[in-house]
Amino acid sequence: MLLPRAIPRPASRSRCPARVPAATFSVTATGAAPLAPPAASPDASKPAAAPSVTDNPQDPYGADTTAPSDGVAAEKRAEFFANVAGQQLINGDTAGAAANFKKAIELDGKNVAATIGMGEIALRQGLFGDAIAHLTKATRLAPKSAKAFTLLGEAYLNSGNNTQAAAQFKKALQLDPDNARARDGYNEASSRVPPPDDEAP
Image 1 (cartoon, rainbow, N blue to C red):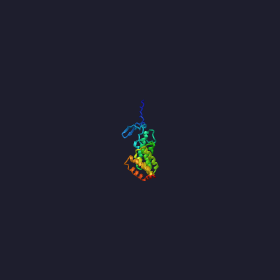
Image 2 (cartoon, rainbow, N blue to C red):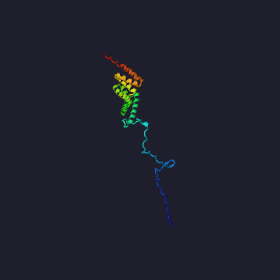
Image 3 (cartoon, one colour):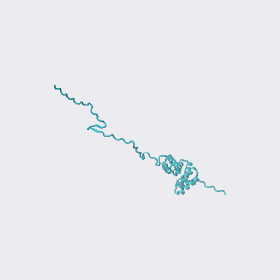
Image 4 (cartoon, one colour):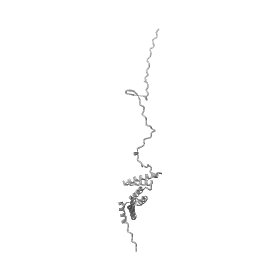
């Protein structure tokens, strides 16, 4: 008796297709294509770019306003502050000029420009005693400065000391004969000085 031949069953199909790793392929309009490697992140170990010099302008001799230990550096910084103050005084910024002249003197007590500047500011403000003190010091530091003697003469003249005013203006004219300001001051001071009393016989 012949047995019926077993009919092989077709291979069962998986209901779920094979999973493709997401990191390997991506589906595009033209089919599967390998993904590009992720963009490299910036190296966190590299330092940030230094700011431009113009981003935060500073005193070229340093941001610290305290006197450095190096005397040469102190003199240069004092000169810097004195120059800034001189421009501020010309522009009418008396308060700013006074602050920078003071910084210059703190850094270098022998800075002539700053000492004269402080005297000139005091003279403008009517502080004749302070002006005389600053300008007298200036004439000692710079005995050949006609400007210092001229301003000192004006300080004495405004304080009422005409004799001293004439003497300072005279010194200024000896240093600079063409100094019109000193000549006008000398003439005014001399006109206010009373003539000496005649000696009794």
